[in-house]
Image (cartoon, rainbow, N blue to C red; front, top):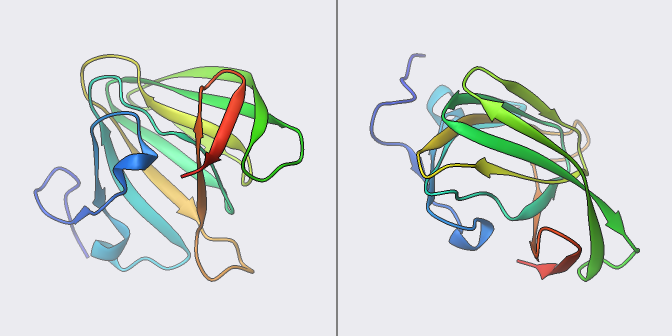
Length: 149
């Protein structure tokens, strides 16, 4: 199979409530009929980033253009949808960078400039799960997660 990540088409419908600004993504995995992982080419515009979230499987990001960041957070408390958070690290991302995000890790990633930032996200489906799942949270990105989106 052959495809081009920059060709038009194969856009995935996304929930705009998962992001802080304009984002679109191209579905790579359905084009190449991959098994065991989902792959998307994600485009962030005008400083857009993901809302705080975590996955039930590991994730790899491969930056394809622009300037961005990846931020990790620690959960404070044991509530499911209304808890404290503390930022534990921030990593700048530029074209060519590869970042690994362990499963069940609170994080956010996206653009740090008004120009487009893009990456390929490879979501590795856990062996014991039928599908890759993400839990999205509203938060202030500083000290509090308000609830599940």
